[in-house]
Length: 212
Image 1 (cartoon, rainbow, N blue to C red):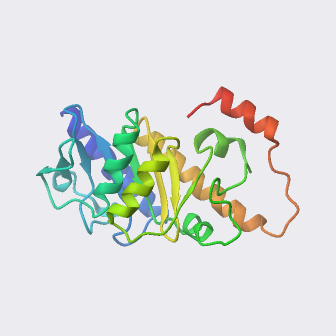
Image 2 (image 1 turned 30 degrees about the vertical axis):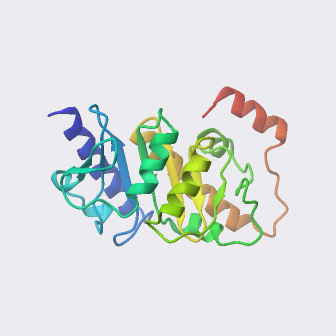
């Protein structure tokens, strides 16, 4: 099995895991992974992450041109923007996960850093999470806004849309996305309650020990 085929299989396995656990639904969400030849593989337009066919995944060159497979997701420009700004990123996960989307709709959140430091693992895996203003899915304006934030952050939250998370491996990107969703759930559960968040000193120490 070639390295690229292994990546395709990993996308299918992790995509199904996300779907089966309710992290994504219907044909929402998309996943991409860089390949050794400088291009990347991405889930096709209208595909369900729970039923991905590795052979039908879209293969793109470094400039986003389709080389083989089905038509790529309409969010191709979004993925490309992140890859171009983050040379170390090897994979990107974009979901419409329920709790993260719910948080993205709240008026109370800080657009510079959406979620407070509730847990150590959120700080370690996600860190600072900026909110990207709403743009229609697949639009170049959305890609441009994500590009601007991606130069400093490996994870962003799209307003009324969902998270976009890059990682050094596909597993890293998936785990960080899961941590973001669970922290969003915790945030919604704790609203209105007196809560002890991590202190600035604790956050600084975690960021020093676990840089993104």
